[in-house]
Length: 220
Image (cartoon, rainbow, N blue to C red; front, top):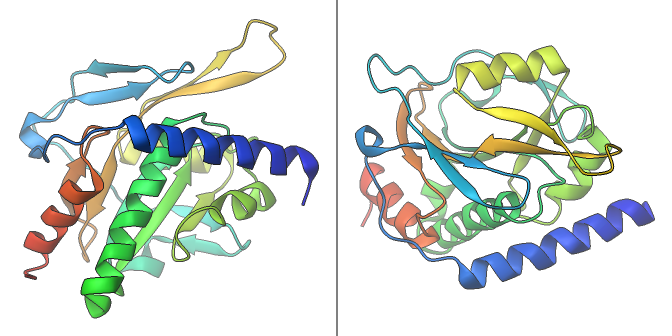
């Protein structure tokens, strides 16, 4: 493994473990009550209003998975999708949310293995210039074995960001030699027909997400 990637992955894992310890969930919130939450480069959260009238989320896309295969939304038709947008250089929030998805998937596999097979977790980069296939492949290995990483060209990522109403913008660091990405931070639950079913905030715990999934899938 590339030493720089290995160092960054180790740093990301440490940050994610710390964030999991200090993070607290406060119950899932219906989409009508949601507000957009933007992750800034220093890990802070700021909220902006999410338009509710005629809200449309999702749609067709063409991307590349972490194994280098071209995929579209049709590859995941008939499945529920847990989708998170982020980037591999994210210091804390992204790995925390991916760990959350991993915990939910592991709990489902333990208690409802057949239902777990109907859910596909997806991580879509908002930083395609750095998150190429090899980088995504290394990063994805830190999380649940069924998590799929998706990247693409800048136009392809811009297109899907617009479809999912994702805010993401580069922020240069003090040296002007590197950058972070401020971005909105939601986990989307999409249904088998690619309809939006729910959105989970950073404040929603893995237990909250799991409980909502159990209810929506009609499990006990």
